[in-house]
Length: 336
Image (cartoon, rainbow, N blue to C red; front, side, top):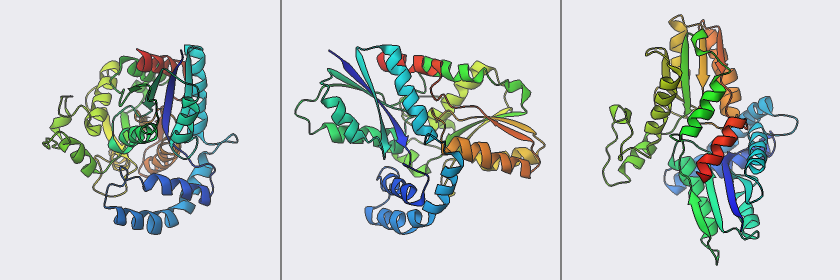
């Protein structure tokens, strides 16, 4: 009997047009785990302010990264699915869904149900756990499955930043870049509101989050803390690459206000340029597939910002996308 593997990434607009981007943003930002405020406030903020004002400007950014065949994130994810299927053979069915837009989790799970799998392995493609990404995706999967008459065995992987094979895949990609040729190395992760970190900390009954030294090591208290997961990812890479202290920084990008995780990637880049740093190598270990946040935000916006203040070049390390080391790692992460 076959088992199924369901890969799930965040999602992407169907096309780089204001209407399609608006549809994507509406679904994404109305998620109660993404904008975790009262429902009425979220509805008004998203539907009357953010989506009407950001759909056009965001569509221009998507046009900048869009390929002839479609969205880079979707194309890379489809290629990953196909390579993993070839790697593990016919005893498993590998499928792909997006948390927002197409292919939807609902439709993909229904297709898998009809194939009568004995077990479904669910892996949200976010290395570090966060309620707004991993948590939201897992909740949606369970929402769709709970009504099934027959619920098969489930293997849900909430995080994998600490899996040795994931680290090996990152290091394999890093071989294409010699960090010693750069003045500084940046590990840039997607940002989150600080309140979401505090809420995750309080999940176990006591808020132990200090937004500081508590993330210096992984403990039972912070094992699912996004901030702690990110700093631990950086430490593992720094140790493996033998990057000297003082030559790297862990930062957070894509913030919406000044109450998000710090330090901010753009401000650190500006400060480094003003200090005379000329070349920066940027890793984005929270993104397993290149997307708007890596290609445009880091590769274009941050590069222009760096040059504005005297820097010469920001080099972005490619995301894992569908490279062979990542396919091999994913097989081990899912099946052991």
